[in-house]
Length: 125
Image 1 (cartoon, rainbow, N blue to C red):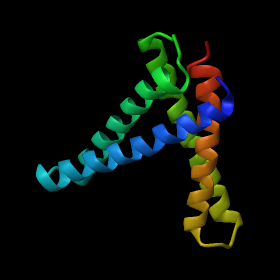
Image 2: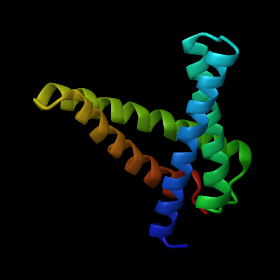
Image 3: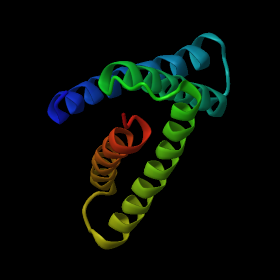
């Protein structure tokens, strides 16, 4: 499968993850009256689980084992998150633009780096 097709699928999975994360957070906070922090953690876990399953099965069509794949996927997430946080902090120190735009730049960096690491490490055939 071509890298462009995989990138499009990865983007679609990302949109779905965002919707699932937001929905879980909303349901926990508004219907079950759960704290912000627990709702946030649960929402992000739901999004990550969804992301792992769909990216493994559909985006990359990987035969990597579930356990080893999940451990690699979690490690990649942490690494990419920390890298994007570093980019964000660097941009906030060096650029004089609105810091919200730095968030968007860091998010774009995260997305690209995460796709590359998942393609060539987590779900490598």
